[in-house]
Length: 268
Ligand SMILES: NC(=O)c1ccc[n+]([C@@H]2O[C@H](COP(=O)([O-])OP(=O)(O)OC[C@H]3O[C@@H](n4cnc5c(N)ncnc54)[C@H](O)[C@@H]3O)[C@@H](O)[C@H]2O)c1
Image 1 (cartoon, rainbow, N blue to C red):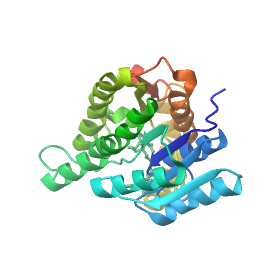
Image 2: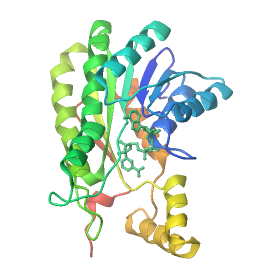
Image 3: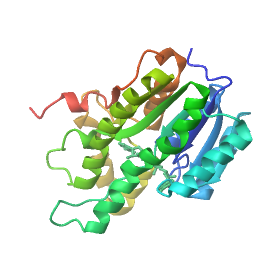
């Protein structure tokens, strides 16, 4: 089940900020465990090298390349490098993203522009350069990474209007791309990620709040999710793996919400 033997996976943001597991890093390692040859890119060369080294230690195959996913020429060069090394691209995971706080009034215009580039244009550029490869092959699976922040505003939470806009924009982008390529053997889907507990979050909270308050906040965040806890990067990675796998061959233009029931619940 869910084997990726013979497939090549091109994953952007395949490192992680800080120690532990981010969504792209977990996805890269999981896909390698399932037999894929992974081409991981990241703006941070050390971070993606760490992912490569984990995969190599486990006996998998990964090539790591420093690449800014907002830079069209750099993405094209990375796609060409992947083709040179592995000869094909079966799976594209557009994982780069992250939020900056701000409302329409207090967010600077350049922050708005950068947020849209970071969260939306990165998926556009990944598709722009990989789709012709998949079209030539007559097959391919694309998974874009969104956030529940694009679909519901957390009551009392911080406003990040550009992030929310970009992440909900990914739904339209995914559906439109999926239907445009549905007759060409290419599927395109979206994973909508909920509140994930990463070591980085804990480390940051510890520093900002101290151990006691950080523990309280983590407990509150866990309690806010109907399933009773936050998810982690592996929950995201398993959803991405499924949508990228042949077992999901009849699934395209859809969104898979991985949030422990968060967006279906409302404050009581
Ligand atoms: N962590 C969460 O709780 C959460 C929740 C919802 C959605 N998401 C989404 O999941 C995705 C991954 O987030 P994460 O928290 O796992 O991230 P992360 O910070 O652990 O990893 C992201 C990686 O992307 C790289 N990166 C940043 N800018 C880049 C660029 N311009 N080009 C190439 N690489 C770049 C970083 O160096 C980092 O290694 C994002 O799209 C994010 O919006 C995360």
